[in-house]
Length: 432
Image (cartoon, rainbow, N blue to C red):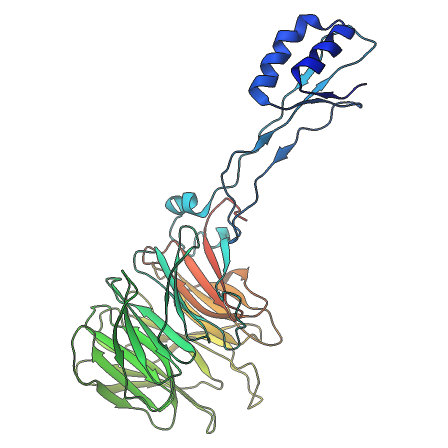
């Protein structure tokens, strides 16, 4: 057997030698159309499909592939050459092409949740404290904050960096988009909250008055209020689009490490953690008069996150510390009734300290994440009605620090302590 390189002159001479002139014009046509024809010195090999390199964010491209054709030619035979055409394998879809086909995540399709992409967002910087994250209401941007003091906006469709917002002098501990998606708030260890214009990345204002780091920030769903919780045992609440002094709510000897508004914007839920006295509580406040109306108790370890159901009836909490201080672990998802503060059920997470929680948009499922020095970070999807564990998703080896879901419920995002983002969605296609 001879190896043929698809040069028309050499190909013509070889065909003349083996009485293949009858197929000359066929092979010339193929060489012009394909540009590369090989004939192996051994029996025909399997077709080759060569993919182009993928993007840095691990989403495959849809660039044209190289087509390789094999032709078997025997010197001792006058038989016609055997043309072997490859079977083309479809290129895996890009994230941008897949997004329109995603369906809202629910308890019914939880088993079909797939990782769509994974991005490295720390820009080469060492991450020590983890990352906070939020997704814009229209699902087009993801905001991240790291301990380098920079807020970054990323384009969901391709993972490109949209803006870097600089101005904080210490680590970013919380980020939140306004309901209309026009502004972004960031909370920092530098004792301030900054409000940014999303369209051009410009700074709107800096909100101060805290006497310690600001651990959390949130906009009310009606767009009227912007609240921040601090390690100085206080909650401050500003009019989101007006100048003026903030409302002040004090918590007794406890860090305010998380806060969320109810869907109707009438209630504000805040997390208070007192490690010294081992007191961990969630407090409900009436927004219109700053009045404390209810306290949720019964936690044995630090509370890390809270989430209202979209109908406002339930409140989910997650707790757990990487280091067990009391010897009495409380690493669970608790579901509470907002109206009376009664606990409905507790979902055990197999000794994994839990870091974040949210409801799917139809309230049929609860998603929690874990973080810990002895366990890898995972995501668990629970049936909100009966507490059944529906599926467990492999997260990050460094642990998950925060979760967010798009307003249409189709895109789930998890942020890891090492600065990576994982994007998840309901899909029967596996995207690498």
